[in-house]
Length: 153
Length: 321
Image (cartoon, rainbow over all chains, first blue to last red):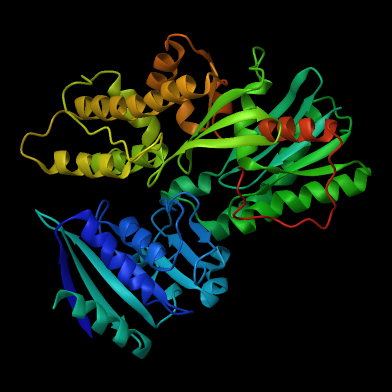
């Protein structure tokens, strides 16, 4: 199950994130992949809004993990950008995120360290806008991807 | 009161002694293990802190004359939980062994109050700009523990923009010092980079990184020196614009800069030249993570009578204000 959506503006990427956050469930894992500036943090900010979080969602590159509480579900926002490929993620304590929503930027750096069932998102930079491809890995994510596809129709 | 400070919340393993006459010792071990990988390795970071902290603490004690301190302060957060726990547990164990008081210190309070360790220190209230790889926040510091956030980044930290732009330019890691060095030989007007204002006094640096990417891929790419000079000028313009506006809004004219980006040559020069403001700059070596700032902030809290139980926990996401 896969859907590719084109966002002409940052506001559209944000809105897609809001839809994703409104649809989020406890234990949801979202893996974001794409070059610098593709909109990974923007999509996460939208997801946070969809969870009902109103504060600032900044890049977690240096902290590695940021935890936001106060929304419908807690949001764990991780970033593997500074880690070497295949790094052991044990010290990030991401297993504690399972009662909330876990978003992992640069997930491609350590995919085997992450839960095998997840929503995999590839973000591409186009000459005008961004293309986001959502892939359901695990049956829990089929409905999510289907509903994202409905947004285009 | 002489206080031993311990800092292990990120890549540096550090210990220092601060007493009534200031800094008696200040030992920092930077983890080379990370340079090899081009980034931080959480599990290796915790292990390296465990391996180095004993040596670092002993060096800090010896350089300060060898006598045990009157109290211990350690960073209790925010940061990687495994890394924070190493220093916090060491600090508590030492305090228990010496039977002296202990306090856990907020890492950012350490940075914010680092200006107070300098020979010429600001009085409260002052504006404190904490600008590093992980943070870009302007605080109004009214007194010890009384802080208000006046501005913060809505996306990337300024230091992160430096590192990621350096990566886009192929300059390697860490990017800040390399951009700073090249910028000295470039024209800051060569490339017109954006100076976003996302609202209020807040900053946004994410779009600047994307603008660097767009420029690098364009057919009219300027020299690295010119790109670095133009990029750095845009970051410094944004930082100092908010500082000046905050000073006007609050009427507070004393400004302290701290955090890794406060070591940037252009930021220091232009901040020092701001009209009508008294600008306090920590020594460049004390802009990055160190334990003197933890000992200093902990000492102020201890002098006020604060004591923390030895069963206090690490706080990986701890807000300061």
